Length: 435
Ligand code: 5AD
Ligand code: SF4
Image (cartoon, rainbow, N blue to C red; front, side, top):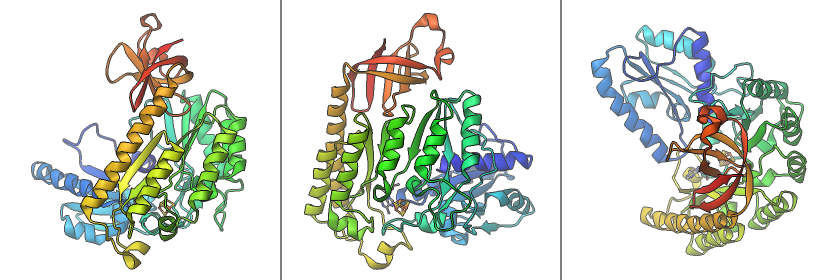
């Protein structure tokens, strides 16, 4: 989401006459787009800001601005604590950046952190940053009001609002016409697209939006993230099964395998509900990969709760998981009402247990892939060898395979679809041969 937001920021600033620099050395402004979801994300930003201080000693004109969720969360406090930061700008205030920068150039320090109930940046055509020219993000909604007990997002990104559907379809079509072959529709909870109480201009719900974007062209792959398990509907799965270009990959964050934890986390579903959704995915889309997010060591988590998470992992057999230690966030329900009572070492131990189990499952899943054939969207040269290409299958797994020299360099084949047979694997990658 931050990546997509930075593309909006670049667009706004280019229109105001600013230019992107290839490197920090010699530029006038460094804008850091930040995440506040866990403390380690914030610590990384603080580290970067302190590194830049040395450079500011050499380049007196260099100013630092902090964008995004950390700006929203800490506001003026961030400038007081890191006195080499000149301005902070929250995620709904990017249209005001040219004004803020003008004020900073006159020597002022400014904080603009007003949240909006309607801003979606729908009319801003993002400048694609660091793009491979093949896949791109499209932000379809902003904000979240699920208020999971541990999560800071509802406070830093504000109320949920959906972007006008026609602007999304137009953006996807324009990307396809420019040669892009994959779009990922982004939102904190895409299943509630168009359903926020105020409706904010969106006249269609998510399954219909997916249907319309997937109908642009069968050669355009469509992905989406993230689905909240409480809202994943059969209707969406039906739409997915009707379009082979909607990718067979669903990210379904579970957070915990214990009903007691899920209730305390305010996730609004049970393990039984979640497993029913997994069964529905497997029924409608037998070849769909499923990925998840999980948190180890949330408030009062017992060894039994932790075992329940491991059991759930064994049952679902995820293809990939983002695994985190619980990090207490100021302002959340958990910060106000629940103790952060699992010692750090114990959180680490539990996390490592989940990571080890998931690594084993991912490797076993990948071994089952050997011998299968996939349509792969080629993205470019493999990082390991100039003689190899890499791409992804519909399930979002990376495949690496030898290129055919007669076809030309990676540029010639990037963005095309190739059939690849899987011949070997690691836990993270499938190795294959062109068919
Ligand atoms: N501590 C640890 N992980 C968190 N996440 C959200 N808030 C926290 C927190 N306070 C994780 C959840 C979410 C993902 C984006 O980040 O797993 O799905
Ligand atoms: Fe955070 Fe829950 Fe919203 Fe996801 S659904 S952004 S975890 S509050």
